[in-house]
Image (spheres, one colour):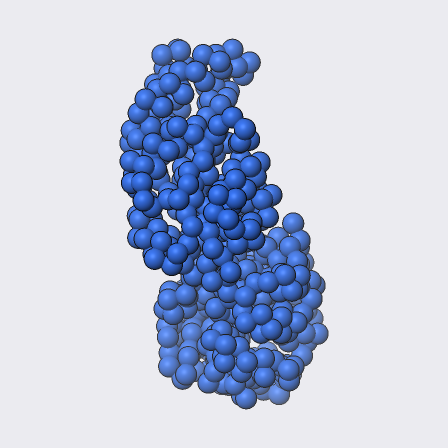
Amino acid sequence: MLKACIFDLDGTLAYTLDSMACVANEILEEMGFEALPVDNYRYYCGDGASMLVRRCLIDAGDSELEHFEEMDRIYRERFNADPLYRVSVFTGIKELLGALKEKGIFLGVCSNKPHEASVKVIQDLFGDSVFDYVIGQREGIRRKPAPDGALFLAGQFGVSPEECLYIGDTGTDMQTGNSAGMNTAGVLWGYRDKKELMENHAKFIAEKPEDILQILEDRIRIIFSDLDGTLLRNGAQTLPEQIFPLIRSLKEKNILFVAASGRQYANMRRMFEPVKDDIIYICENGALAVYEGQLLYKEPFPEDLCRDIYKAAMEKTDTEFLYSGASHHYLIPKSPEFVDFLKNVVRNDYKCVSGLSEIPEECVKCAVFETGGVTEGDMNYWEERFGSRCEVATSGNGWIDFIPFGINKGYGLRRMCERLGVSPSVSMAFGDELNDIDMLESAGFGVAMSHAADAVKKSAGYETASEEEVIEALLRSEGRLNKEVMACIQKKR
Protein backbone atom coordinates (compact mmCIF):
# COMPACT_ATOMS: atom_id res chain seq x y z
CA MET A 1 0.00 0.00 0.00
CA LEU A 2 1.32 3.45 -0.92
CA LYS A 3 1.54 5.79 2.06
CA ALA A 4 3.53 8.78 0.76
CA CYS A 5 3.70 10.98 -2.34
CA ILE A 6 6.95 12.77 -3.10
CA PHE A 7 6.63 15.53 -5.70
CA ASP A 8 9.13 17.25 -7.90
CA LEU A 9 8.55 21.02 -7.91
CA ASP A 10 9.30 22.67 -11.29
CA GLY A 11 7.02 21.30 -13.99
CA THR A 12 5.12 19.05 -11.58
CA LEU A 13 3.58 21.22 -8.88
CA ALA A 14 4.21 24.64 -10.41
CA TYR A 15 4.74 26.24 -13.79
CA THR A 16 8.13 27.95 -13.45
CA LEU A 17 9.36 28.05 -17.04
CA ASP A 18 8.77 31.80 -17.52
CA SER A 19 10.41 32.49 -14.17
CA MET A 20 13.63 30.61 -14.98
CA ALA A 21 13.77 31.89 -18.56
CA CYS A 22 13.23 35.51 -17.58
CA VAL A 23 16.03 35.55 -14.98
CA ALA A 24 18.50 33.62 -17.15
CA ASN A 25 17.79 35.63 -20.31
CA GLU A 26 18.17 38.90 -18.42
CA ILE A 27 21.65 37.84 -17.29
CA LEU A 28 22.61 36.57 -20.76
CA GLU A 29 21.70 39.90 -22.32
CA GLU A 30 23.70 41.78 -19.68
CA MET A 31 26.69 39.65 -20.66
CA GLY A 32 26.27 40.47 -24.33
CA PHE A 33 24.50 37.31 -25.45
CA GLU A 34 21.09 37.02 -27.10
CA ALA A 35 18.10 35.81 -25.10
CA LEU A 36 17.07 32.21 -25.71
CA PRO A 37 13.53 30.95 -26.53
CA VAL A 38 11.48 30.26 -23.40
CA ASP A 39 10.64 26.76 -24.71
CA ASN A 40 14.36 25.86 -24.59
CA TYR A 41 14.18 26.02 -20.82
CA ARG A 42 12.07 22.86 -20.80
CA TYR A 43 15.30 21.02 -21.51
CA TYR A 44 17.68 23.27 -19.55
CA CYS A 45 15.88 22.71 -16.25
CA GLY A 46 15.48 19.60 -14.13
CA ASP A 47 19.09 18.98 -13.11
CA GLY A 48 19.76 21.92 -10.82
CA ALA A 49 20.54 25.60 -11.24
CA SER A 50 24.17 25.11 -12.22
CA MET A 51 23.29 22.70 -15.01
CA LEU A 52 20.64 25.13 -16.28
CA VAL A 53 23.27 27.87 -16.44
CA ARG A 54 25.71 25.59 -18.27
CA ARG A 55 23.14 24.65 -20.88
CA CYS A 56 22.09 28.28 -21.37
CA LEU A 57 25.64 29.47 -21.91
CA ILE A 58 26.52 26.70 -24.36
CA ASP A 59 23.44 27.40 -26.47
CA ALA A 60 24.09 31.14 -26.27
CA GLY A 61 27.57 30.61 -27.76
CA ASP A 62 29.85 30.33 -24.72
CA SER A 63 31.01 26.78 -25.49
CA GLU A 64 34.05 27.16 -23.20
CA LEU A 65 31.83 28.30 -20.30
CA GLU A 66 34.03 31.30 -19.64
CA HIS A 67 31.10 33.13 -18.00
CA PHE A 68 29.86 30.14 -15.99
CA GLU A 69 30.99 31.09 -12.47
CA GLU A 70 29.76 34.66 -12.83
CA MET A 71 26.37 33.71 -14.30
CA ASP A 72 25.88 30.86 -11.81
CA ARG A 73 26.42 33.27 -8.90
CA ILE A 74 24.17 36.00 -10.31
CA TYR A 75 21.42 33.55 -11.27
CA ARG A 76 21.26 32.13 -7.74
CA GLU A 77 21.26 35.57 -6.15
CA ARG A 78 18.45 36.91 -8.30
CA PHE A 79 16.42 33.75 -8.19
CA ASN A 80 16.64 33.46 -4.41
CA ALA A 81 15.66 37.13 -4.08
CA ASP A 82 12.35 36.55 -5.90
CA PRO A 83 11.75 32.80 -6.56
CA LEU A 84 8.01 33.36 -7.12
CA TYR A 85 8.36 35.71 -10.08
CA ARG A 86 5.95 34.48 -12.80
CA VAL A 87 5.34 31.19 -10.94
CA SER A 88 1.87 29.62 -10.86
CA VAL A 89 0.35 26.37 -9.59
CA PHE A 90 -0.79 23.92 -12.27
CA THR A 91 -4.56 23.53 -12.58
CA GLY A 92 -5.87 20.68 -10.42
CA ILE A 93 -2.81 20.43 -8.16
CA LYS A 94 -4.35 22.06 -5.09
CA GLU A 95 -7.43 19.85 -5.37
CA LEU A 96 -5.20 16.78 -5.68
CA LEU A 97 -3.18 17.72 -2.62
CA GLY A 98 -6.35 18.28 -0.62
CA ALA A 99 -7.67 14.85 -1.58
CA LEU A 100 -4.35 13.21 -0.68
CA LYS A 101 -4.33 14.91 2.73
CA GLU A 102 -7.85 13.61 3.40
CA LYS A 103 -6.57 10.09 2.69
CA GLY A 104 -3.78 10.52 5.23
CA ILE A 105 -1.02 10.37 2.61
CA PHE A 106 2.33 11.88 3.61
CA LEU A 107 3.30 14.68 1.20
CA GLY A 108 6.83 15.77 0.39
CA VAL A 109 8.72 17.85 -2.18
CA CYS A 110 12.12 16.90 -3.57
CA SER A 111 13.65 19.53 -5.85
CA ASN A 112 16.97 20.36 -7.48
CA LYS A 113 16.14 24.02 -6.87
CA PRO A 114 18.28 25.48 -4.04
CA HIS A 115 16.81 24.47 -0.69
CA GLU A 116 15.96 27.96 0.54
CA ALA A 117 14.18 28.82 -2.71
CA SER A 118 12.31 25.49 -2.69
CA VAL A 119 11.00 26.08 0.83
CA LYS A 120 9.97 29.64 0.07
CA VAL A 121 8.14 28.71 -3.15
CA ILE A 122 6.23 25.89 -1.46
CA GLN A 123 5.26 27.99 1.56
CA ASP A 124 4.08 30.92 -0.55
CA LEU A 125 2.17 28.77 -3.04
CA PHE A 126 0.65 26.21 -0.67
CA GLY A 127 1.10 27.47 2.89
CA ASP A 128 2.70 25.66 5.81
CA SER A 129 0.14 22.91 6.39
CA VAL A 130 -0.02 21.03 3.08
CA PHE A 131 3.42 19.45 2.70
CA ASP A 132 4.97 17.53 5.56
CA TYR A 133 8.55 18.15 4.42
CA VAL A 134 10.41 19.96 1.63
CA ILE A 135 13.97 19.21 0.56
CA GLY A 136 15.92 21.16 -2.06
CA GLN A 137 19.52 21.11 -3.20
CA ARG A 138 21.73 21.63 -0.15
CA GLU A 139 24.95 20.38 1.38
CA GLY A 140 24.83 16.68 2.25
CA ILE A 141 22.01 15.94 -0.20
CA ARG A 142 23.25 15.11 -3.69
CA ARG A 143 21.11 16.55 -6.46
CA LYS A 144 18.77 14.34 -8.42
CA PRO A 145 19.00 11.78 -9.99
CA ALA A 146 20.82 10.67 -6.83
CA PRO A 147 18.21 9.15 -4.48
CA ASP A 148 19.39 11.09 -1.39
CA GLY A 149 16.52 13.57 -1.17
CA ALA A 150 13.82 10.99 -1.87
CA LEU A 151 15.23 8.56 0.70
CA PHE A 152 15.62 11.37 3.22
CA LEU A 153 11.92 12.17 2.88
CA ALA A 154 10.89 8.51 3.24
CA GLY A 155 12.92 8.41 6.44
CA GLN A 156 11.21 11.56 7.75
CA PHE A 157 7.81 9.98 7.08
CA GLY A 158 8.77 6.64 8.66
CA VAL A 159 7.80 4.65 5.54
CA SER A 160 9.72 2.27 3.30
CA PRO A 161 10.72 3.32 -0.26
CA GLU A 162 8.26 0.72 -1.62
CA GLU A 163 5.46 2.64 0.13
CA CYS A 164 6.30 5.88 -1.72
CA LEU A 165 5.11 7.22 -5.07
CA TYR A 166 7.66 9.55 -6.62
CA ILE A 167 5.98 12.03 -8.99
CA GLY A 168 7.80 14.15 -11.56
CA ASP A 169 7.88 15.39 -15.14
CA THR A 170 11.40 14.52 -16.35
CA GLY A 171 13.62 11.54 -16.96
CA THR A 172 15.76 12.76 -14.07
CA ASP A 173 12.77 12.42 -11.76
CA MET A 174 12.09 8.88 -12.92
CA GLN A 175 15.74 7.97 -12.38
CA THR A 176 15.55 9.45 -8.90
CA GLY A 177 12.47 7.49 -7.86
CA ASN A 178 13.69 4.26 -9.38
CA SER A 179 17.15 4.51 -7.83
CA ALA A 180 15.45 5.07 -4.46
CA GLY A 181 13.40 1.87 -4.95
CA MET A 182 10.12 3.79 -5.16
CA ASN A 183 7.13 3.59 -7.46
CA THR A 184 7.32 6.30 -10.11
CA ALA A 185 4.67 8.37 -11.88
CA GLY A 186 5.60 10.58 -14.82
CA VAL A 187 3.30 13.55 -15.44
CA LEU A 188 2.41 14.91 -18.88
CA TRP A 189 1.43 18.46 -17.87
CA GLY A 190 5.07 19.42 -17.22
CA TYR A 191 8.10 20.11 -19.38
CA ARG A 192 8.95 16.75 -20.98
CA ASP A 193 7.07 14.15 -23.03
CA LYS A 194 5.86 10.60 -22.48
CA LYS A 195 8.69 9.14 -24.55
CA GLU A 196 11.34 10.49 -22.17
CA LEU A 197 9.39 9.33 -19.12
CA MET A 198 8.92 5.80 -20.47
CA GLU A 199 12.54 5.54 -21.57
CA ASN A 200 13.47 6.29 -17.97
CA HIS A 201 11.15 3.57 -16.68
CA ALA A 202 8.17 5.48 -15.33
CA LYS A 203 5.91 2.85 -13.81
CA PHE A 204 2.83 5.04 -14.30
CA ILE A 205 1.94 7.95 -16.57
CA ALA A 206 -0.48 10.63 -15.34
CA GLU A 207 -2.18 12.81 -17.94
CA LYS A 208 -3.81 15.09 -15.35
CA PRO A 209 -3.40 15.60 -11.59
CA GLU A 210 -6.51 13.66 -10.58
CA ASP A 211 -4.98 10.54 -12.20
CA ILE A 212 -2.64 10.32 -9.20
CA LEU A 213 -5.57 9.29 -7.00
CA GLN A 214 -6.19 6.21 -9.16
CA ILE A 215 -2.46 5.49 -9.42
CA LEU A 216 -2.25 5.38 -5.63
CA GLU A 217 -4.40 2.27 -5.71
CA ASP A 218 -1.54 0.59 -7.61
CA ARG A 219 -4.20 -1.48 -9.34
CA ILE A 220 -5.20 -2.22 -12.93
CA ARG A 221 -8.79 -1.18 -13.61
CA ILE A 222 -9.22 -2.05 -17.30
CA ILE A 223 -7.56 -4.42 -19.80
CA PHE A 224 -7.51 -3.85 -23.57
CA SER A 225 -6.60 -6.81 -25.75
CA ASP A 226 -5.90 -7.22 -29.43
CA LEU A 227 -7.12 -10.50 -30.94
CA ASP A 228 -5.21 -11.73 -34.02
CA GLY A 229 -1.70 -12.67 -32.98
CA THR A 230 -2.34 -11.84 -29.32
CA LEU A 231 -5.21 -14.01 -28.08
CA LEU A 232 -5.62 -15.69 -31.46
CA ARG A 233 -2.20 -17.17 -32.08
CA ASN A 234 -0.77 -19.01 -35.07
CA GLY A 235 -3.69 -18.13 -37.32
CA ALA A 236 -6.36 -19.51 -34.95
CA GLN A 237 -9.93 -18.30 -35.47
CA THR A 238 -11.31 -19.45 -32.11
CA LEU A 239 -10.27 -18.15 -28.71
CA PRO A 240 -8.51 -20.36 -26.16
CA GLU A 241 -11.12 -21.74 -23.76
CA GLN A 242 -9.28 -20.54 -20.66
CA ILE A 243 -9.88 -16.89 -21.56
CA PHE A 244 -13.61 -17.08 -20.74
CA PRO A 245 -13.33 -17.97 -17.03
CA LEU A 246 -10.52 -15.42 -16.76
CA ILE A 247 -12.80 -12.68 -18.12
CA ARG A 248 -15.56 -13.70 -15.69
CA SER A 249 -13.09 -13.54 -12.80
CA LEU A 250 -11.86 -10.12 -13.94
CA LYS A 251 -15.43 -8.84 -13.89
CA GLU A 252 -15.92 -10.19 -10.36
CA LYS A 253 -12.90 -8.15 -9.28
CA ASN A 254 -14.20 -5.03 -11.07
CA ILE A 255 -11.58 -5.17 -13.80
CA LEU A 256 -13.18 -4.55 -17.17
CA PHE A 257 -12.04 -6.46 -20.26
CA VAL A 258 -12.09 -4.73 -23.65
CA ALA A 259 -11.54 -6.63 -26.90
CA ALA A 260 -9.89 -4.30 -29.45
CA SER A 261 -9.56 -5.54 -33.00
CA GLY A 262 -9.71 -4.70 -36.68
CA ARG A 263 -12.52 -7.25 -36.88
CA GLN A 264 -16.22 -6.48 -37.14
CA TYR A 265 -18.53 -6.37 -34.13
CA ALA A 266 -20.72 -9.35 -35.14
CA ASN A 267 -17.64 -11.52 -35.61
CA MET A 268 -16.14 -10.50 -32.27
CA ARG A 269 -19.40 -11.00 -30.39
CA ARG A 270 -19.71 -14.58 -31.70
CA MET A 271 -16.10 -15.21 -30.77
CA PHE A 272 -16.76 -14.16 -27.16
CA GLU A 273 -20.16 -15.94 -26.97
CA PRO A 274 -19.74 -17.31 -23.39
CA VAL A 275 -19.00 -13.79 -22.08
CA LYS A 276 -20.50 -11.71 -24.89
CA ASP A 277 -22.30 -9.26 -22.59
CA ASP A 278 -19.48 -8.97 -20.06
CA ILE A 279 -16.99 -7.07 -22.21
CA ILE A 280 -16.65 -3.93 -24.33
CA TYR A 281 -15.91 -4.26 -28.03
CA ILE A 282 -13.66 -1.80 -29.87
CA CYS A 283 -14.10 -2.86 -33.49
CA GLU A 284 -12.77 -1.95 -36.92
CA ASN A 285 -9.49 -0.62 -35.51
CA GLY A 286 -11.15 1.85 -33.19
CA ALA A 287 -13.81 3.20 -35.56
CA LEU A 288 -16.67 1.55 -33.65
CA ALA A 289 -17.36 0.63 -30.02
CA VAL A 290 -20.21 -1.39 -28.51
CA TYR A 291 -21.14 -2.40 -24.94
CA GLU A 292 -24.14 -4.48 -23.90
CA GLY A 293 -25.54 -4.18 -27.40
CA GLN A 294 -25.42 -0.38 -27.36
CA LEU A 295 -23.37 1.60 -29.88
CA LEU A 296 -20.99 3.80 -27.87
CA TYR A 297 -19.58 5.68 -30.86
CA LYS A 298 -18.98 5.35 -34.60
CA GLU A 299 -16.43 7.20 -36.76
CA PRO A 300 -17.04 7.28 -40.55
CA PHE A 301 -14.26 6.52 -43.05
CA PRO A 302 -13.66 9.24 -45.72
CA GLU A 303 -15.64 8.36 -48.85
CA ASP A 304 -13.05 9.60 -51.36
CA LEU A 305 -10.26 7.66 -49.65
CA CYS A 306 -12.38 4.50 -49.59
CA ARG A 307 -13.09 4.85 -53.30
CA ASP A 308 -9.41 5.29 -54.18
CA ILE A 309 -8.31 2.30 -52.09
CA TYR A 310 -10.98 0.20 -53.81
CA LYS A 311 -9.71 1.20 -57.26
CA ALA A 312 -6.11 0.39 -56.29
CA ALA A 313 -7.14 -3.01 -54.91
CA MET A 314 -8.99 -3.85 -58.12
CA GLU A 315 -5.86 -3.03 -60.13
CA LYS A 316 -3.49 -5.13 -57.99
CA THR A 317 -3.12 -8.83 -58.63
CA ASP A 318 -3.99 -11.29 -55.81
CA THR A 319 -5.55 -8.54 -53.69
CA GLU A 320 -9.10 -8.49 -52.33
CA PHE A 321 -10.95 -5.44 -51.02
CA LEU A 322 -13.09 -5.23 -47.89
CA TYR A 323 -15.55 -2.44 -47.04
CA SER A 324 -16.63 -2.39 -43.40
CA GLY A 325 -20.01 -1.02 -42.39
CA ALA A 326 -21.33 -0.99 -38.84
CA SER A 327 -23.56 -4.02 -39.45
CA HIS A 328 -21.90 -5.93 -42.33
CA HIS A 329 -18.75 -6.31 -44.34
CA TYR A 330 -19.17 -5.83 -48.09
CA LEU A 331 -17.17 -7.77 -50.65
CA ILE A 332 -16.58 -7.12 -54.33
CA PRO A 333 -14.76 -10.43 -54.67
CA LYS A 334 -12.33 -11.46 -57.35
CA SER A 335 -12.48 -15.12 -56.38
CA PRO A 336 -14.92 -17.52 -54.67
CA GLU A 337 -12.08 -18.59 -52.37
CA PHE A 338 -12.08 -15.19 -50.69
CA VAL A 339 -15.82 -15.39 -50.09
CA ASP A 340 -15.39 -18.86 -48.62
CA PHE A 341 -12.57 -17.59 -46.41
CA LEU A 342 -14.71 -14.76 -44.99
CA LYS A 343 -17.70 -17.05 -44.53
CA ASN A 344 -16.19 -20.24 -43.12
CA VAL A 345 -12.83 -19.23 -41.64
CA VAL A 346 -13.15 -15.64 -40.44
CA ARG A 347 -16.94 -16.03 -40.04
CA ASN A 348 -17.89 -12.43 -40.77
CA ASP A 349 -21.38 -11.15 -41.45
CA TYR A 350 -20.95 -10.15 -45.08
CA LYS A 351 -22.73 -9.31 -48.32
CA CYS A 352 -21.39 -9.51 -51.87
CA VAL A 353 -22.00 -6.53 -54.14
CA SER A 354 -20.86 -5.61 -57.62
CA GLY A 355 -19.76 -2.07 -56.78
CA LEU A 356 -19.52 0.59 -54.08
CA SER A 357 -22.77 2.22 -55.21
CA GLU A 358 -24.74 -0.84 -54.03
CA ILE A 359 -23.56 -0.56 -50.41
CA PRO A 360 -26.39 0.84 -48.22
CA GLU A 361 -24.38 2.03 -45.18
CA GLU A 362 -21.46 4.35 -44.59
CA CYS A 363 -17.94 2.98 -44.35
CA VAL A 364 -16.14 2.74 -41.01
CA LYS A 365 -13.01 0.94 -42.25
CA CYS A 366 -11.29 -0.20 -45.45
CA ALA A 367 -8.93 -3.15 -45.69
CA VAL A 368 -7.26 -5.30 -48.31
CA PHE A 369 -6.39 -8.97 -48.12
CA GLU A 370 -3.20 -10.16 -49.80
CA THR A 371 -3.97 -13.75 -50.74
CA GLY A 372 -0.30 -14.74 -50.75
CA GLY A 373 0.43 -13.03 -47.43
CA VAL A 374 1.72 -9.51 -46.86
CA THR A 375 5.19 -8.98 -48.32
CA GLU A 376 7.55 -6.03 -48.01
CA GLY A 377 6.65 -5.15 -51.58
CA ASP A 378 2.95 -5.11 -50.71
CA MET A 379 3.53 -2.74 -47.80
CA ASN A 380 5.70 -0.46 -49.94
CA TYR A 381 2.98 -0.38 -52.61
CA TRP A 382 0.20 0.59 -50.22
CA GLU A 383 2.29 3.04 -48.22
CA GLU A 384 3.42 4.82 -51.38
CA ARG A 385 -0.17 5.05 -52.62
CA PHE A 386 -1.90 6.06 -49.38
CA GLY A 387 0.61 6.68 -46.60
CA SER A 388 0.21 10.44 -46.93
CA ARG A 389 -3.57 10.20 -46.52
CA CYS A 390 -3.95 7.66 -43.73
CA GLU A 391 -2.07 5.17 -41.61
CA VAL A 392 -1.30 1.90 -43.41
CA ALA A 393 -0.76 -1.01 -41.03
CA THR A 394 -0.63 -4.79 -41.05
CA SER A 395 -3.26 -6.42 -38.88
CA GLY A 396 -2.28 -10.10 -39.18
CA ASN A 397 -3.03 -13.08 -41.40
CA GLY A 398 -2.62 -11.31 -44.76
CA TRP A 399 -4.62 -8.18 -43.90
CA ILE A 400 -3.60 -4.56 -44.38
CA ASP A 401 -5.78 -1.94 -42.72
CA PHE A 402 -6.19 1.70 -43.73
CA ILE A 403 -6.77 3.87 -40.69
CA PRO A 404 -7.71 7.56 -40.79
CA PHE A 405 -5.17 9.65 -38.91
CA GLY A 406 -6.27 9.90 -35.30
CA ILE A 407 -8.80 7.03 -35.46
CA ASN A 408 -7.30 3.79 -34.20
CA LYS A 409 -7.31 1.43 -31.24
CA GLY A 410 -5.53 4.03 -29.12
CA TYR A 411 -8.33 6.47 -29.87
CA GLY A 412 -10.79 3.79 -28.73
CA LEU A 413 -8.82 3.22 -25.53
CA ARG A 414 -8.79 6.90 -24.68
CA ARG A 415 -12.51 7.30 -25.41
CA MET A 416 -13.43 4.29 -23.29
CA CYS A 417 -11.30 5.44 -20.36
CA GLU A 418 -12.85 8.90 -20.53
CA ARG A 419 -16.37 7.49 -20.74
CA LEU A 420 -15.80 5.13 -17.81
CA GLY A 421 -13.97 7.68 -15.67
CA VAL A 422 -10.83 5.53 -15.61
CA SER A 423 -7.38 7.01 -16.04
CA PRO A 424 -5.39 5.44 -18.91
CA SER A 425 -2.55 5.22 -16.40
CA VAL A 426 -4.29 2.26 -14.71
CA SER A 427 -5.05 0.44 -17.95
CA MET A 428 -3.11 -2.43 -19.50
CA ALA A 429 -3.08 -3.19 -23.22
CA PHE A 430 -1.80 -6.21 -25.16
CA GLY A 431 -0.91 -6.26 -28.86
CA ASP A 432 1.46 -7.55 -31.51
CA GLU A 433 0.87 -5.70 -34.79
CA LEU A 434 1.48 -2.23 -36.22
CA ASN A 435 -2.19 -1.34 -35.81
CA ASP A 436 -1.76 -1.88 -32.03
CA ILE A 437 1.00 0.70 -31.56
CA ASP A 438 -1.13 3.68 -30.60
CA MET A 439 -3.12 1.54 -28.15
CA LEU A 440 0.09 0.29 -26.51
CA GLU A 441 1.43 3.83 -26.26
CA SER A 442 -1.85 5.17 -24.84
CA ALA A 443 -2.17 2.56 -22.08
CA GLY A 444 -0.52 2.95 -18.72
CA PHE A 445 1.03 -0.48 -19.30
CA GLY A 446 1.51 -1.29 -22.98
CA VAL A 447 2.52 -4.95 -23.27
CA ALA A 448 3.87 -6.26 -26.57
CA MET A 449 3.78 -9.95 -27.31
CA SER A 450 7.24 -11.51 -27.45
CA HIS A 451 6.80 -12.44 -31.13
CA ALA A 452 5.80 -8.88 -32.13
CA ALA A 453 7.73 -6.84 -34.66
CA ASP A 454 10.50 -4.62 -33.32
CA ALA A 455 8.50 -1.45 -34.04
CA VAL A 456 5.65 -2.77 -31.89
CA LYS A 457 7.97 -3.78 -29.06
CA LYS A 458 9.60 -0.37 -29.17
CA SER A 459 6.21 1.31 -28.67
CA ALA A 460 5.43 -0.71 -25.54
CA GLY A 461 7.06 -0.42 -22.15
CA TYR A 462 6.63 -4.12 -21.38
CA GLU A 463 6.65 -7.53 -23.02
CA THR A 464 5.15 -10.98 -22.42
CA ALA A 465 4.83 -14.37 -24.07
CA SER A 466 1.33 -15.00 -22.72
CA GLU A 467 -1.49 -12.57 -21.98
CA GLU A 468 -3.34 -15.29 -20.09
CA GLU A 469 -0.45 -15.72 -17.65
CA VAL A 470 -0.45 -11.99 -16.94
CA ILE A 471 -4.20 -12.00 -16.31
CA GLU A 472 -3.89 -14.99 -13.99
CA ALA A 473 -1.20 -13.15 -11.99
CA LEU A 474 -3.40 -10.04 -11.84
CA LEU A 475 -6.30 -12.08 -10.52
CA ARG A 476 -4.13 -13.56 -7.78
CA SER A 477 -3.00 -10.06 -6.81
CA GLU A 478 -6.53 -8.58 -6.87
CA GLY A 479 -5.42 -6.42 -9.78
CA ARG A 480 -2.47 -4.95 -7.91
CA LEU A 481 0.88 -4.55 -9.63
CA ASN A 482 2.94 -6.73 -7.31
CA LYS A 483 6.28 -8.38 -8.06
CA GLU A 484 4.63 -11.47 -9.58
CA VAL A 485 2.65 -9.38 -12.07
CA MET A 486 5.62 -7.21 -12.96
CA ALA A 487 7.74 -10.31 -13.50
CA CYS A 488 5.21 -11.46 -16.12
CA ILE A 489 5.60 -8.19 -18.06
CA GLN A 490 9.30 -7.63 -17.67
CA LYS A 491 10.55 -4.36 -19.07
CA LYS A 492 12.61 -4.80 -22.20
CA ARG A 493 14.48 -1.50 -21.96
